[in-house]
Length: 161
Image (cartoon, rainbow, N blue to C red; front, side, top):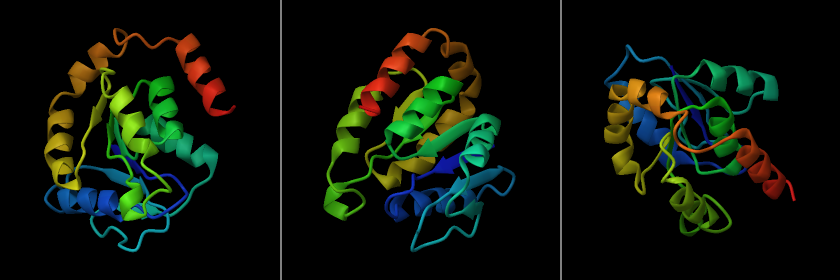
């Protein structure tokens, strides 16, 4: 199952539409999304705008991979649960965020073995296909990518101030 998450602050139509377009040709792939207040609700996968923290954690835990923005909450959850994560950073110039902080965040975390970053919504479909084809590779890499509980705790402490 693929879990799509865009956070809760602003619409992220580029990501939702890109995944929805990909899903149109893959009715056999289970996809569930937390898509926020999107202006273009998906038609090819089930979604909600918001969910409780418990439901979010359950969906995240059930996922084989996650597709989302480059928000620290999503990144920390992927680290904690050792989930492959495809990130498309929000862009301030497109009013998806107040600034381009997610671009820098994604650039920093792209070297982690479980993470993939695309810079354009046009690359989402191809990268999802590649990641799904390599799920076993991500599972075998999860213990070797150098993120221990102490690093996750440090990142969480930094984000929480």
